Image (cartoon, rainbow, N blue to C red; front, top):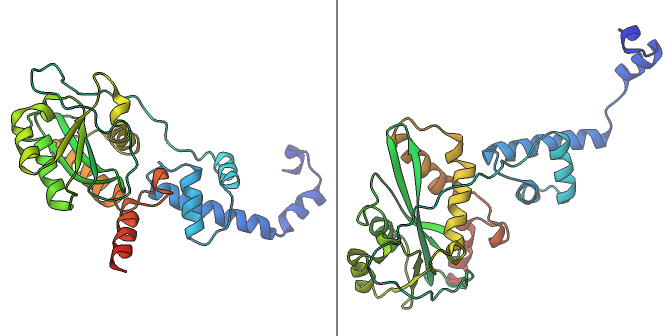
Length: 274
């Protein structure tokens, strides 16, 4: 073996007997923690979120060091894929003004909700996911997975869940794109009955609803693109897991200072209870 590797016998035996340094032990332990966090995130976390998780576990390590260890061990966040918007704005229903005007930061829950619809492919056909997100803590407070794009199964169903899950202010703004599901009379009726102020993005401007669109991009990258759903039931099960178990409760959000939506909600409730 020494001849094949072109090393001396003494050098080989020294290598066998050498002790692992404390630094190597620490780095190996750190690598294992990084792998655990990475796997728990389903491969979605990059160095910033992993560094934050390590900090909460008691590791005082810099983000560059975490990034270096990840790079040396070929650990990287999954590449984001492009996706398709499913907005049908070719209708004659009334259009609400853009009241949100890209102001995505609010101080209290129940002040501004944003909503959007996207598609998910299965072996048994398309399903359509509608979400309602509170801008305060980025929590998905309402959602619906439907077999059609009808308002009663998409926007209306998701809004009803949001209304039952979270209190709202008197001046709640509900922002969406110009899709017919948000502009139709059935949806407008619920908006009016609940004294909600409706806001819509400008025509063809996805940035006006960036938070909801960003959620879908994250969802598809971290979850949907990894599966080949055999049925609509499988898709529903994964959407439930991602939203209710992972995203709302465990996924750290950079906009929230790397807190989870649940942590933000709990902090707000604690301050109000004090």
